[in-house]
Length: 163
Image (cartoon, rainbow, N blue to C red; front, side):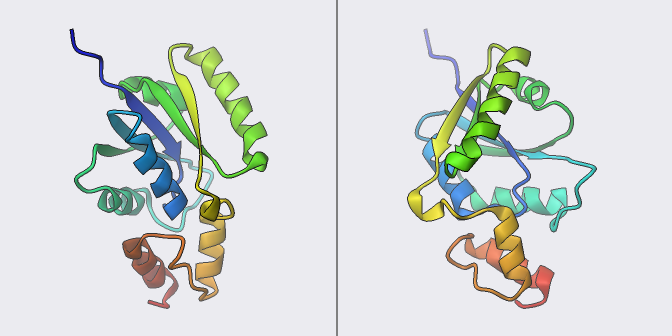
């Protein structure tokens, strides 16, 4: 009898995807058969990149890997179930992320007891990196080449007119 496929559902805005996010997905692929990077549609937030642009940028990051990119709205656990996920993947940068992520994981466990939340710490050189910080630095013409993949750096340059 074969083992059932393990699928991690990795939700977030990924606006833009950083090397920290990329690191989490690549390491998760050593643990899970497949990772679904799930772009949250939040109507109250206006992103730098449209959902379709983000989807394409994330897809380009993981070409040839067992990674699917989807857009979802509404309750994350419902979307995870609809995509056949066995776990929810969350990245932690440091202690400051833990309390909020712990609250989310506890509520998610209440809503969907069959889904396990798996936390992965980002590598130490990515502790300080967030999408918000990347957008801020890039908007001011700063060099973010060390913290995002090359194609995302190029897309940021085009958005901010400093390509």
